[in-house]
Amino acid sequence: MLNGAMIGGTAGLLAAGGLLAYAARGRSSTVFGPSVYHGNRARPAIALTFDDGPSESTPALLQILAHHNVTATFFMCGKNVERLPGVARSVAAAGHEIGNHTDSHPRLDFCSADFIYRELAVAQEKILLHTGATPRLFRAPYGVRWFGLKSAQQRLGLLGVMWGTIGRDWKWPAPRVAKLFLDRARNGHIFCLHDGRTTEPAPDIATTLAAVEAIIPALKERGLRFETVSQILCPMS
View 1 (cartoon, rainbow, N blue to C red):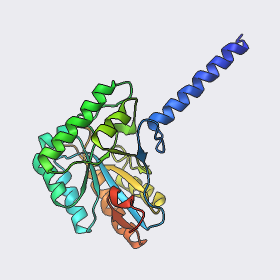
View 2: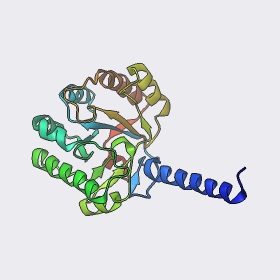
View 3: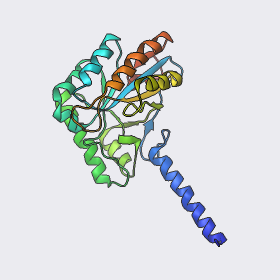
């Protein structure tokens, strides 16, 4: 039988584990560094964000965004920028915002502070070198933050960005992704999709492209504007 001390100790471990899980993955958590997950709720605007790029399919996404006159925020991996510098430059040239998504897209939990800093710093250098843009926003791969990230963000001048809704476009069909976004859309919402698959070459993002084609006109009809994350965080239009 378990005695009171054992039960209390187990409860304490579970509570501590729950707190750590929230700190690492909770969208509203700022335990491991300054972070946001939504913008100004007073204005009818939302932000589309795309992780894991650039990829060979990013130009197709840029065409869709240009057709609908929409700007977005792209959280790029340094290794993908290095592999496809021309595509990375085209994102910046089209007026989209570029954020840091680490160099090689690792999960950061249980990594050392030095490792975390290097991942962010190397990505920052590659993005600046190939696009001319210095990211001010950071999104952790898989949405996982860890000890040491706060220091890295402070040293590099990065604000963490989570999301209100993630599309699961790597495994769901486009109609399901689109329905999720249409059901969740509200003022200040930040949506997460993907124009790459970690650092995989030539990923298939057909689901993402189809979902974006459906989402944009439907939300515009509701009177919602599309802004970058930096724009959506501003208190005034």
